[in-house]
Image (cartoon, rainbow, N blue to C red):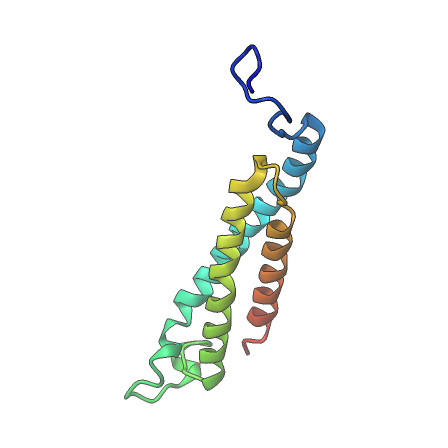
Length: 129
């Protein structure tokens, strides 16, 4: 059966209240600001250590001449793999938390996952000598 307005009888569609939306925005807006900055730092680190994937070149490296960080070291490959494996899911979780901001479904796991992944990326970044 339907009502006078043509809607089906029963429960009204669920919507979030103004207070709930304000709380969600209060959580997500700072998360977005911090996440975008951290993801930019991680992207710079990945580009800077991009040569870590190819291994040492044919020319020997002298850190005094070429600069610190220019020489290939095996731990750079581990840094690159871990940071890439953390940054991509963090970006996906950040996007999902923005998409589900107005949803009545559970939205809170996505910002939490974003924060934890960015923390893991920061710990990986700190391990680079």
